[in-house]
Length: 187
Image 1 (cartoon, helix red, strand yellow):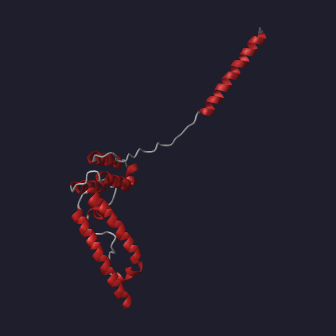
Image 2 (cartoon, rainbow, N blue to C red; image 1 turned 60 degrees about the vertical axis):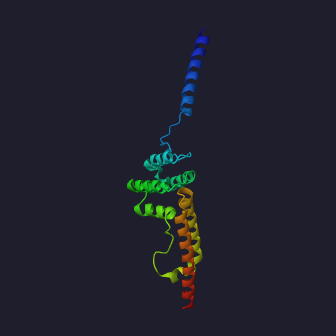
Image 3 (cartoon, rainbow, N blue to C red; image 1 turned 135 degrees about the vertical axis):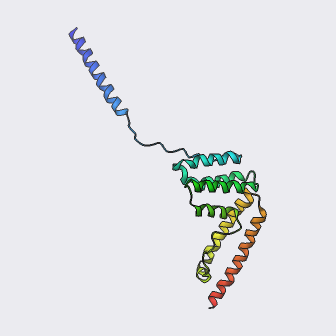
């Protein structure tokens, strides 16, 4: 009988020790903060998409996704392109600036890049000859910006008149730069 009781005691002690060590081994402690959920706008309705964009961008940990969200809104607006969409994008840019998500200069550049006939990728000064060596690269920048204008003006806002003006302005600019660079080389 003593052997049975001692056997039971040994078994209970062994089982308790096994439970304790197993419990310790499987317990993991994580002190990491969960990743923020930065929901992108989706669907076909533009107003709810803009609301989702603002809600997501209001979370400071998601503000780095501004450009992705902006381009997603452009995609969604292509399903219902109207002139009113320019105003919606303008209001988003003003709001994002007021929230400190983007700067005043960035807001202006976004709007100009997508919704204006003016180009932001033009040289800032009038020393034309200094740009001649990079003319091929500049032309690539201009073409990329014209594609963004097509996406914003035609795709999102159905504003073919302003897009045609931008395209015409670019053609004229290219001719002027070509002539100016020829003159610079002749000097």
